[in-house]
Image (cartoon, rainbow, N blue to C red; front, side, top):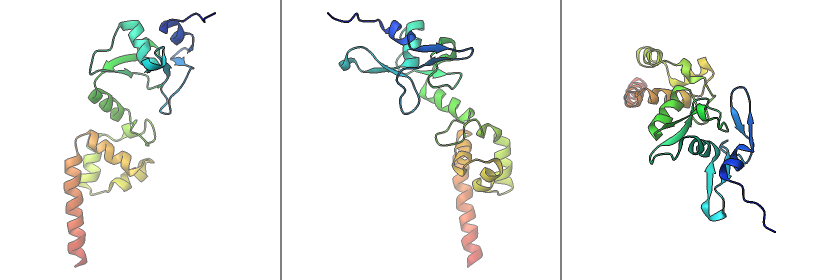
Length: 170
């Protein structure tokens, strides 16, 4: 006797715990923290749980768009916590919320563009000094500067500082 095949909707929602805030996927979680389930047969591959939740609620995801989270909870599948966006939208959202990979979450938002321009460019402080002051990595500070479009200026400043050090040592 063969097992009764469940629909994708049944398979998704049977593994969701609804809290006051998020609806959490409790099935397989990828190493990056996102929920995942098979599309059915092995050859059909896997789908992210939040993407399937979007598709079941709103229909197919248009080509070139991603299903993103307002709540930043990777295993959340609550449809009103999800929205569509491009890769650029996702990167911008990530930078604004301070979620760059390997950085303390939600901390870089304290570094405004004006603050970074003043401290780094006008006062000549290094990204290491700024990072220490705020309990961040220097990489997080540089990534925040990059998110504000200051990367080209950073290279110029670094080359200028290096030239000054060489001149002073001669």
